[in-house]
Length: 300
Image 1 (spheres, rainbow, N blue to C red):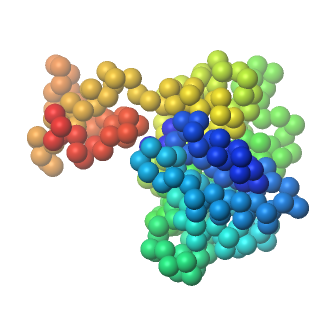
Image 2 (image 1 turned 45 degrees about the horizontal axis):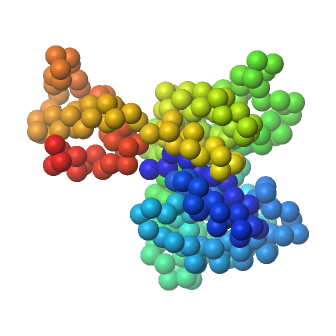
Image 3 (image 1 turned 45 degrees about the vertical axis):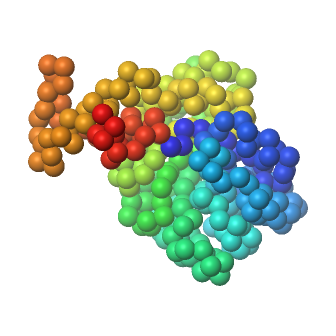
């Protein structure tokens, strides 16, 4: 379960250690935008060292590394430095199409083999709307790599790529191009069978605005949200954690379908019809609650 994914500069061991205890479900150790060109090499070593010594248990955050984009010429050096330390995933920025995911898969495979890691251990997350090309190729990300486990969207880099002076209007609402990017990310995630991750909320002092944006993201199908400040984590976690009554209903639906067998069609719960779409939604709620849908019927 990834409700909150907190960006942490990869050249600050102190910030990474502090972030480990902030309650985020995942840390995105950043080698890209938050690291100056002159500090890239040092940041790689700091991140690799942190990965090698970080606590890895059920209560520790997942560790994801955002590498530099494929067109920078820096990606191979990033991967060579950090894949051997076994991050949970690599976040690829400015992914332009599914071909970029295939490319990254191959590069990771080489580094896994060099490090003696099991093939396919390191997953891929992708920022798919930071360029116009990525936005227009959203459907191409499906079925390109078994490593792909999440897609996210970004509004800041897309604004720069298309020449927009702002990504929001005077009322603070995303303008049409950015609403399209958001929508296509949800659709691309569903099409690929992976998690959809909402973009950052840049005003880290506006908790009411963050909460409203989180709840809209939950409503529309996002699985989690990226954060830029530890203070945002608790708000994100609360919004993406389903209320107990929703979890209880999801467990009941899963138990009903399990009892009815694989050929179950339309069933009844509390006098109302439920069918396969309700089952899929129940599975999503269970996963968001940190439960394994397959095991829930045995617990009922």
